[in-house]
Image (cartoon, rainbow, N blue to C red; front, side, top):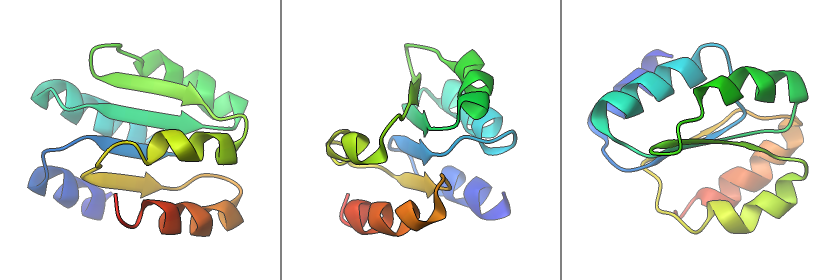
Length: 104
């Protein structure tokens, strides 16, 4: 969390969250709400999705169910992200998404 907090404070463009959590999602939601930044969160585990979905705010925060990470790939590269928090399951998929997002 300290690294995430520092990055949020030093950037101003949209944030991508791959894999939601009980710490990162509420924090990012609040910070983006206060600053008017766009936040897009993807989650593939139903229990985490239902938790994160309470933070959906169509003005600035979208929470999406990722039934297949490969189907999300084309969508996530369409935006230049200040931060891409990659913490989703399965862990092997993280390597693919780091490569995919390296230049965006």
